[in-house]
Amino acid sequence: MSNAQERHGGEDEVVQDVREESLLLERALGGWRGVLDSGAPTMVFVLADLVAGQRLQPAVLAALACSAIVAVYRLIRRQPITQVAYGMVGVAISAFFAWRTGRAENFFLPGLLINLVYGAGFLISILTRWPLLGVGMGYLTGTGSTWRKEASLRRVYGAASWIWVGIFFGRVLIELPLYWSNAVAALGIVKIILGWPVFLGGAYLTYRMLGPVLRAQRAAAQSRQS
Image (tube, rainbow, N blue to C red; front, side, top):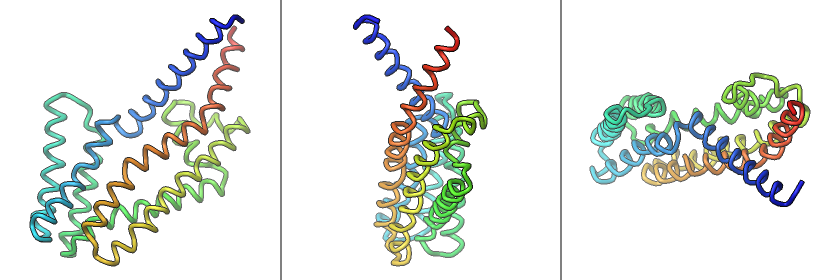
């Protein structure tokens, strides 16, 4: 193979990697719009709580209104609202917890519980040798559980799943002391920082770990077809 062909093959591989990474982001998070839309109500809640002098009702209503405005905006532009809908449900549940108890910090309690459940779920899946990352990737790519037939994939899915154990449990360990201290503003800021930026960082590290194995599989499949 000539140098030009090798360079062309390498370029095609990079393009394919970018396409796969974008596809997974679009399917898992609703794309960049979904990532930003899901974080907007939390930012509004924190800002409204500060501006209103830590009065709960205006902050809750502002968060709900923000979620509704985002949904209407996406509908007007005829854009997907799957992620927005999930976000609206999450905001409604968080608002209910805060309103019912009269404590602003309880707006963040559902998120803490969800992270605890996800972290435990990933940990259990690794220990039972059915890493959730493999299950999720199989669903997103339409390959089902065929990954379990490949020892290399089983290993890399198990190893990469530890990233998510660290992310979910790490959020709990950092946010829980702030929750106990009733530090609503700090909790909101930390939640935003540990939200989609950390999620995207984890997704990038995961993809980098999976990349070599997925490329090897793709090359093997192409060689069998040729």
